[in-house]
Structure formats: structure tokens, C-alpha cells
Length: 203
Image (cartoon, rainbow, N blue to C red; front, side, top):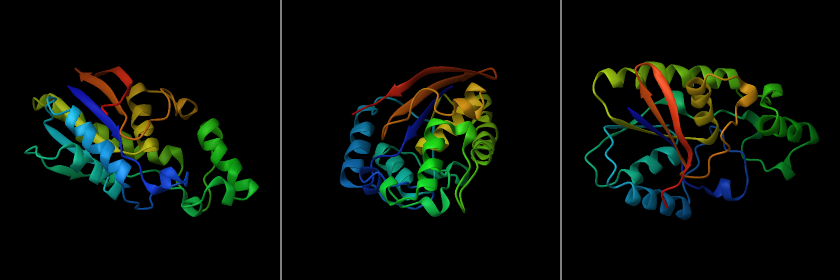
């Protein structure tokens, strides 16, 4: 069973380099274009079922990729983005020195990351991501599903990969940070995962 794990298209906050987290920011026109192009270039790839984060930028990306297909996009709150608390909406220029340090840890030394007020621990995001994969995705193989699409976010996708690759948070960014609409492709068979590719763009 193939699993495509896709990051959402671009938003204004992506362009402005603001932390998004659980803030519900819509796609911008470039993000919509990327999603449409991705869908067009995946037209001949058949998907049995599609899941998306409930946040607008991911759900709309999934809808645009699957446009004109007879398939329903299923929202699942477990794959919403990691929350950054009081840092959401800020650029690094708008942060205090301590806040910038936390952000740098998240991206450069995740094993040392301590969330800001209202933020989420990597371990907590990894737990819900693993639950989603184990409870929602893995049972589909026995039901005969051949190909699954998951559309979510840069960090929560890496949290899913922590479970798939079975590594700790020190390797959280293993495989590199996903570009907008980048797809990680993995194969799941008889309880085992194989990472096919982590750098796929279809636009």
C-alpha cells in the first residue's frame, strides 16, 4: 500500500516567514496554483482515500489536488499542525531573543526544543501522529486499499515520519523540510514500511 504524505500549498504567512502552527491561515493564489498543478500531474495516479488536516490550508490543498475525482476528503484533527502558542503569527524579527532561541532549537536541535507559552511538545504531536497512522491508515491495507493520500503540514508530517522511520526527535527533520506541496512517498506492506522517496514535487 502506497502512502503519499503531502504538505499544503503556500500561504501569505509562508511567504512572510511567519510561524503558523494551529493558526487557520488560507492558501494564497500561489498555493492554490501549486495544488492545482500537483493535482493535474497526479491525475493518472489513483487514490482510494484522502485524509487532511482540518486547517484550511491543508484541507483546501487536498480538495484542489483531488478536484474532479469522485473522492471525499476526510478531515482528521490528529494531523493538524504542531501548535507554537504565543509565537504564532510572528516573524523572527518580531521575536525576543529568547523566542528566537526556541525557534532555532525547533528547527536545528529539536531534541532540546522547549515550546513557548501555549505551544505543543514534539512528543505530544508525535503521539497523535502515530495514533493516526496506527488507527486510521495501517488497517486499510487489510481492507485492500492500494494508495492513500494524506495532506497536512511540515512539522506534523515529520511527526508521522518519526513513527514510520522509528527514530527519536533528534532526527525530527530527517529527510529535509518539505516544500509546499512536496510529497513523501512510503510503502506499507505486512506491517513494514519502506521509504520510497521524500522529495517529490508534481508541479
